[in-house]
Image (cartoon, rainbow, N blue to C red; front, top):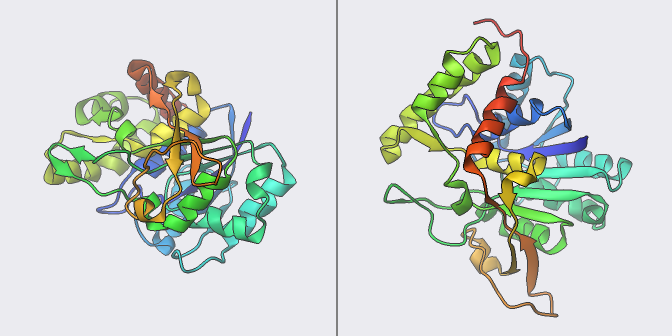
Length: 296
């Protein structure tokens, strides 16, 4: 059983905003080996007020009000929040037994580190979704990095200090493409209420992807990070030495460097999906494993 703190910018169901954090949340709820201790909300897909309210609403929809939701830092200039205090307190109460999954800006993790700079020494593992190692192009359209670039200093802190760190980059998430047709077949027509909930809540995102990228589907960014946390056997690990350079991190670019002794680089694991078929099966199985009494 993994004890997890999920730090995210969940906007699933918010018009015009991404759905992947919410789908990662449902994935975790569908995993019997995951104990989701709390959700800390951050900015990125939207402002933290919207993310906090949306995540609270979503847990109510899913009958999981037992999971605490904490409001995080509103920007990289605000480094105090109940989320940061919760992260620190929970990690210190469970030393060596907490997995941190972060899929938005990293300001909450940075704020927790500033409260106690030993925090990363006390966690079991850290999995992040963010960063790019080359241009991120979707159907010929260049897409900016949207997580690590929000707070370069926070990203550098995590790269330098996080224990057992794995990063799922935007480039490596491109394989996790979920088509509209398969989504409909597996979720809309199933008997489980959770399938209909996901399909209905995410319907607007398919329209968004068609208008913006001319795609009949979407890349399921944050679910890849959640899947790596819970089922690393579906991935192939790959270690790189990443430069701790704020200028690169301002655009979320993870530039490789030579291994050095002067703290200019950090070795991190950058996994890639090794078995796409099994990965997709695992995701849908976890989603449909969530029991809800939501009326449809």
